[in-house]
Image 1 (tube, rainbow, N blue to C red):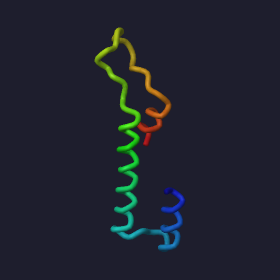
Image 2 (cartoon, rainbow, N blue to C red):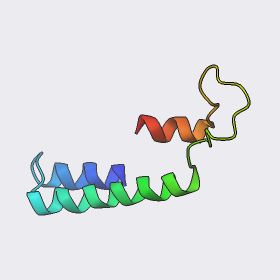
Image 3 (cartoon, rainbow, N blue to C red):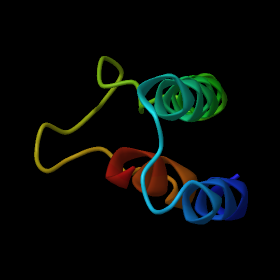
Image 4 (cartoon, helix red, strand yellow):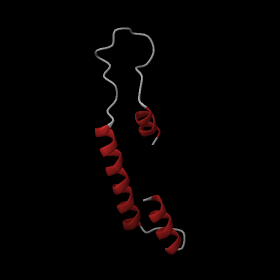
Length: 66
C-alpha cells in the first residue's frame, strides 16, 4: 500500500487531492482495526503481581507505535 500511495502522489505532482487522501486514510484505518482485533492488548484483570506493565507481544508493540 505504501508503494502505491507513493506512486500516486508522485504522479499527482507531490500532493494528493482531498478525496484521494481520504481514501488511503480509510484503508490505513481499516488495516489498523484488523490488527487491533488480531492482537488485542494484554488482559490486566488476571495479573497476579501489581508491579510493572503487562508483557506485550512484538506485534502488539508495533501496532501501538503505528
